[in-house]
Amino acid sequence: MAERIPQLAIMGHPNAGKSSVVATLTENDRIAIDKRAGTTTSSDVYPVVIDGRSVIEFIDTPGFQNPNAILEWFQNNEQENQDLARAFIKEFGSDDLYSHDCALLEPVANGAGIILVVDGSKRIKEKDRVEIELLRLTARPRMAVLNNLTSQTRYMDQWQDALSKAFNSVRIFNAHRATYAERIKLLNALKSIDQRWEPLVEEAVDAFAHDWERRTDQAVTTILELLKQALTYKVSRTVKDSKIIFQSGRDRIKAELTAEFENDLRRLEVEAQEHIRANFRHNVWHLPPDSILERDLLSEEVGQALGLSRRQLALVGMAAGAASGVTVDLATAGHSLGTGALFGAAAGGVLGMVGGKALAKLNIERAPGTHTFTIGPVSNPRFPFVLLDRIVLYSARAMNWAHGRQAAEETAPDRVPEKDVRKQGFTEALTAQQQRVLGRFFSAARRGKESDQEAECREIITGILRGVSLDEIDSRSDL
Image (tube, rainbow, N blue to C red):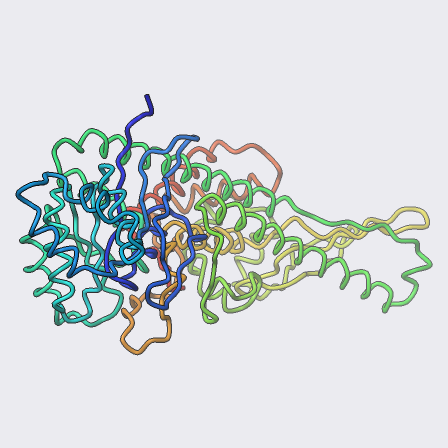
C-alpha cells in the first residue's frame, strides 16, 4: 500500500496567484507562472521531496470556468450525495463544457484538502462568493489564503469575514515575499483544518524543518570553505631575468598577476554563491541593479558597506595577534600603504585596496637567472569580514527569496514596499567576543593552519543564518 501523505489542491479563479503559491511552498521556481489570466488548464502535482521521499503534495489546478452552474448543481444534489465533487465528476466527466471544472475537482474527489487562493487587494465579487460557497459544500478540509500582492489593503477585512464563515482556517500569505518562517507557519496552520490530518501534516513539517537545518549546515560549510580558500590563495610566476630588464617588464608581470589574483578571488566567491543558490533550490535568480551583491567584490562601495568599523577592526587585530605587516597597517590607520610587505629581502609593494588598506602583498624571490613573483595570500585584515558579510548576505537572500517571486510586478506603483534596511553587513552587529573569534580564525586561515576557533565560527555563522530564516534577524534581502 502506498504511503499516505497530505495532498492539497490549490484553487481559485484564474490569475489569483495559485501557481505563485505552489512555487513558493514547494521551492520550485521552474513552475510556469504566466501573468495572463487562465493559463493553468490542467491539474499538475508538485511534491515536496526530501531524501527521495514525497512528504506533501500540492496540486496546481485550473480556475473555475462554470462556478455558478456547479454551485447550483451542488445545492440541488447535496441531500442525495455526501461526496458532491465525486458525484459531479461522475455525471459531467465526459462533458467538454465542464472539462476544466472536472480537472479542478478531481483531486478533491480523491480526498485532497483545499487551499483557496484569493487576491485580497481586489474587491469581493459575486463570483468569489459563489466559489467560497461551492468549496464549503465539498465538505473537505480547507484553508483560505489571502495572497495580497500589492499595498492595497482596504478589502482585507471584507475577505476575512467572508472566508472565515466557510473555511477552517484563513491565512494572509504573500507568495512573492514569503520567508522561510512564513512558509513554515502556513504549513503548520494546515494541521488545524482537520484533526485527522494533524499527524500527517506534522510529519511533513518536521521533515521539512530537519531538511532546512541540513541545508543551513551545508551553507555554513560552503561559507567556511570559501573563507579558507580565499585567505590562503596566492599566485606565482617565475620569469627569466631577460624578461624584466626594464621596469615596464616588471610592471607587466605585476599587473597580470594582480588581475589573476583578484579575478580568482571573485571566482571563488561566485562558485560558493552557486553552491548556496543550488542548496536552496533557486534556478531563477534576479538581483536589483542597485544591490550590493551586484557590485564588484573588491569595489570601494562594497568595502565601505560591509565589514567591521575601523575601531572594531583594530580591537580584533590586537586580539588576533595579526602578522607584523598587518599590525603596521592598522597602527597607521591604513596610510602605510603596506609598509610591512616584503619585496625580496627588504623592499615592499602593495596590491589593491580594501577599506584603505592593502589587499595583498607582492613578494619577489631572486634566483640565478630568474625572479619568482608571488601575490598573496590576502593580508588585508578587513577583507575576510567583507567577504563573510557578502556570502552571508547572499545566503540570507537565497533562504528567504520566495520561489514564486518571478511573477512579481517589481515596478508596479502599488507593489508592496520594500523594507527600509540600513546598508551594512552582519559582522558589525556581532558581539566583540564573536568578532575576536572570527579574527583569530582568519589569522590562522591565512597561515594555512587548523584553527581551534573553526567550531565557534561555524556556530556564529549558523546562528546568523538561523536568525535570518526565522525572521529573528533582518535578512537585508533588499541589499
